[in-house]
Length: 335
Image (cartoon, rainbow, N blue to C red; front, side, top):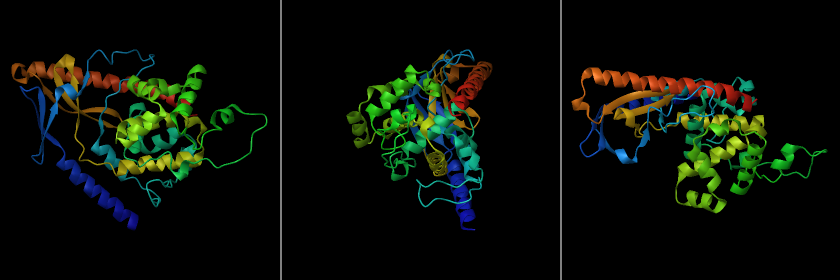
């Protein structure tokens, strides 16, 4: 009864917040700022120069190509509500304790464990990992993820032992070890889905030493720390056991259940169309929530309709290609 009451409270709170944060209007001002008004009459002003810019040529890729399109967007309220309504057998004592799910077979791989809860494809998988790390719901260096100390050594020496014997945790806990594992995987053709991450993520990870990583943490640059930790987690995914995967599964699920609907919308500038697009991400992929054009008053209804159809076509293509690439690569990597 207590769990049901908690779930009901979460749903009511989420519903109220979602209504509060809906976009009622967007305007592209003469000052080159995007003016957003919400349904509760609150407003927000976003600088066009500081927003993520995209072109319609970016997602024009062949299905066989080894790249995906990544937009930094927020999670869709409907997805969060759907996850909150899932029946969980029990809640852990805190955010680092695993939730216990009836289908324990899902915990055999990181991919199957998380996909069983959050659905979606590669982009959704990565966004949820980053959010759980950034919100500190998932802490890869808590005592739950510390490797037990042992003098045992396999005979003959295994490759996995050779590569992880210096790790104090189930993920490499410093940049030297993490980068060493990256280059070994790259040399052996074992990077898998890591190659599909945004180049900026990989560059941040490879150019950051341990001292800089610690400085990011000290300065409160949680997004950079979360991206690097996500890289470390993916690099160690094939070494994780069921216990660690179950803990991660629980932490990610609980982080999304606690997701704040008060976060500002993510607005992407589609330069080819002269449009600012408020977008979210649900278990199906990217979704357009609202659009405003830089020269809206000069466009006819027909021109606006054509641009809307073209942009929706771009998003549909991105979702389709991302899904196919994800299914082809990620499932094989996490077997």
